[in-house]
Length: 130
Image 1 (tube, helix red, strand yellow):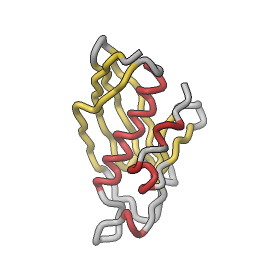
Image 2: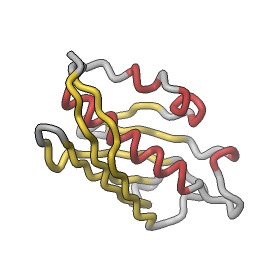
Image 3: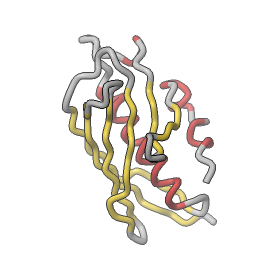
């Protein structure tokens, strides 16, 4: 499935978020750590990290379900483990459980040195559109 349509969203454009793949071919997102994305203490804002977690899960889910389904976030949980100060983030999700209506994913947020800086769980609801 062509996932480029996700990058056309306004939030994706504003954040400069891009779809990437890790060495195993797993899809995810990359966000550059710019001044506009930092909180007052210099680290990347948690809301930006949370948005990237949701986006990476969306990439993984959309690739899995194809163009005949729309996927909407129904639950999102993020645990922040380390501050992201002088690093971009790379975020990858995997599907834990795919049911008829819900898909549950786990997500890892990595810095430039492959440290896990946050983890997340995202649940999507599926709706057939095709």
